[in-house]
Length: 141
Image 1 (tube, helix red, strand yellow):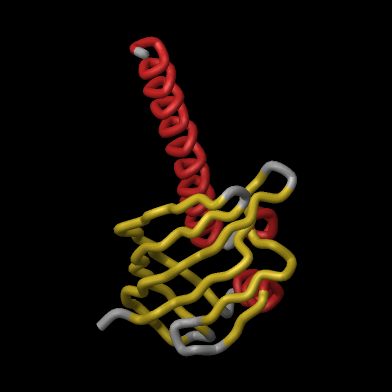
Image 2: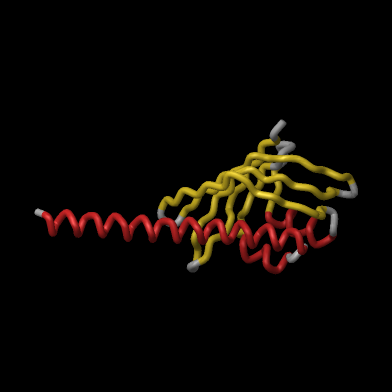
């Protein structure tokens, strides 16, 4: 019985390590996304956002991948600071749910904005890489 228990414990330990590595890979995409947003790198962003991506903004508007890429490329949306807090990742096969708090500063169509949002971003693993398919933002007071 002892060898069986040892095997079970080893499998559980390796499974936990593998899961942590997958969660870390999703967090890494989120950090790369932040860097791309700050640099207005639409080529990098395009690789991280699925073609059918939808965002529900802090104002309740629905924005597509094309809306986001266009506004960043044109400078209509210009982010100067993005700070993350309380990021958590849950994995469900080829789907990852990331939740957290973002403290964003920038301008939208020339109007300054700053503040925290609590958000959820859903990723799907396609062709070996994570792509965002949905984001929901809620402003924090």
